[in-house]
Image (tube, one colour):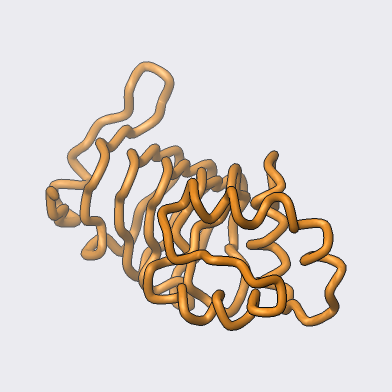
Length: 158
């Protein structure tokens, strides 16, 4: 995984569409100012950052310091990893993925439906989707949990 510095990051020039494109599996935890119109590949990780408008994140990106990060209008992530108690601050497409560290939490929260979410994400989807309507009728969910569960229905979420 490439570990980016702010100096190296700032040297990346936009493509013909005006977008700065970064490959998959980059470590951007040292970058504090991201700026506008950036596109990040699959599996990138971020720390405390300020994201400008219209930044995009491919599947399975991880945000480690979301409480101290800011996201501009139009930011969107495709199936991000999420382990926070508050919902993502950006639009998401596809399921919001629980991190491995949150499996026991979700197991406990979904216990009354007797679901096994210990497998890979395809297995989790197989377990949850048939029961999602019943699960979502429960009043036990926090705003964040509800958003995560609703993301498994498919389609865009904000």
